[in-house]
Length: 519
Image (tube, rainbow, N blue to C red; front, side):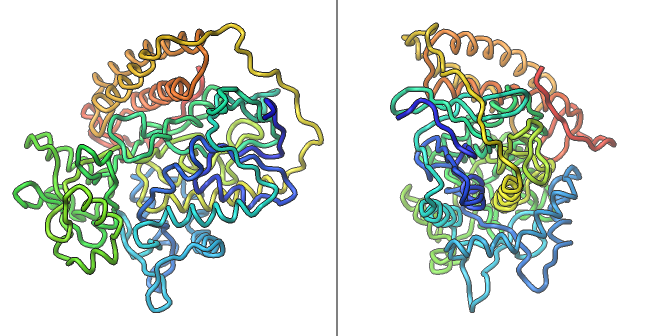
């Protein structure tokens, strides 16, 4: 395998955003598609809920836009939201053209509702929407002879040439060799950063890689204080925070305490259908004030046949842990779930660096504001990935690519102290969970900031001394992303959406984004 590759377009990430981008790029372009792990391993594959779109007669674009703005606590970008919502029906059609079998009844989409939605507008494939989307998109990608797939490769850093991005250094995890991928255009589709927290619904790949790389390259990164905690992840020692879809609450699931007492009516008139930040804080408060390990989500009253039809994956998963959800409630806890901030982009996915694009959860398009409305995430991936590809297709690509030196390992050695990496990895995630979690304070944020500065110095020293590995690359990205989250949280002197600070409980009269630039 050569240590240097040349392509027209380099796409780092193989979730829905990465695959859709690849499929909408010109067939005349050579495309490298980089997968950090196995190609289907990522948040998109595990998405249960669906894709929101105006598909019912009693729904309209204005309602979808209004719901999204309300969920975003006044911080959403109206231009981006309008663009996403108006392109949503076509996004559904596009997915169907690639074979995605959306659930239908009497030849009409079976639409569910989730937190924040005023109408039923979530198209889905039972409770395995993400899996079906990924499998069908991947089949289409594999049929294109202009797309080369590289599995088990992890990006190290972006290649910069005169303030423009020209690809990336990428570690081949099997050979342990860093290879240069030089390209006219680079698209980051690396997903979010919820692995910065101890408890998360995300797969192990969500370590903020794209955000950290872009930041180190000088990109603007915006609103990283807004980490969405999914209110209902399965509470079981062996479940690894398995997600209990928001659609369970959308279909009437009730949150209760151990004594079956309901509590959401004490927090919001929308009860279980309140936005995720409201529900997560309510659960967090009930657990802390009453000393509970978890709360419960009850859908058993729907009956076994109905549950089997609507939530077969959840039913089977819970059953594997001895929980029969048709007869008993599901034990649940909140867990870090979605990164609403990210690399600042425009409607065409352009970042603040020339020839560098960002799509999906890694990007900040402005559609989520201070809190993402359920099932707008897959929609954002599809709409902005297509827009990104269209923009690249219109660009005149240079006939020459710049020349870069090969990766230099001459001044580092193999590490015999890998325990340091494991220790710091664990410390960062516990620190973020305890001090930068669902409810924050100035004192906790300041402590986290100070400790992360020390950890970052330790990681930089280790990185400059030893040969890199997957764990070390992720650790380096993890600490940098954690620092950005904390710095953004300190800058926001109010409580808005997903960011709740006990020292600033009221909304500020000034509605503004928090944009962090490299120092």
